[in-house]
Length: 316
Image (cartoon, rainbow, N blue to C red):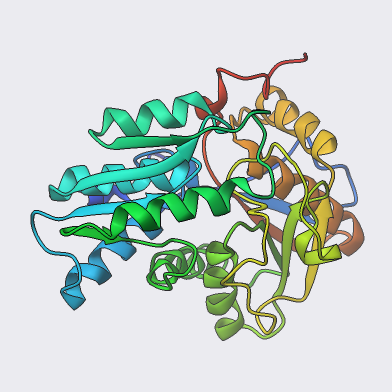
């Protein structure tokens, strides 16, 4: 059956959301629960961060904190920066991002393509270290002190949750019989908390599991470390993490997740990014524990096309 295409929209911002969900078939063994992935790379910049960027900007506009002619400032490793650059381009704001060479060059180029200014904080090792993101935040705060600048502050701005809650509402419509477990990797934890809030409001039985890289186990063990998973593992306690909205935290080994990233491309036809690989490894482990006739859902946070310059999707 051929599905009806969506109606025309007024601007690219109206193309955010209403992303599809697919079931994983070949990477999930027999006897496991069903595993579904919500493909958030169908958003305009290829990431679910489009949702939070739009809500942060529009909530600031609604309050009068952000006015025409101003410049938005943020600290970002790439996806949030790309999304804010996109939203600012559509709305006519300037945008400055404090970022680093530790993040994918494709993301930095994307930000610049939208007309934004990228201020690079150099990482000598090229890795995401415990002090890198705090250094980026300090730089963004310094820039935002200038007249006519607005600091969107993704690490503390709860306006982001408004956008992420839409994922939960969409999942509730896509799974009318309920979701047994939802899992997701966390940076500031906005996405998982936004989804968790909505799913819990629909059914108290929905289990929420938060994930982090095993090489930087801040939530599970209380200390940060060096890792290579962009967008999560920020090196400090996730500011939006609400202990009443999740049931368990798990640390996922990076190498296991890297293998899964390649399998998703070759066996499921899904090109996904760095944090998605952790999500799927955890989802399959949860599906094994639950057994058949249950449903596990996670998200594909962004597209693997953002990482083609590195070795994420290669055998080396």
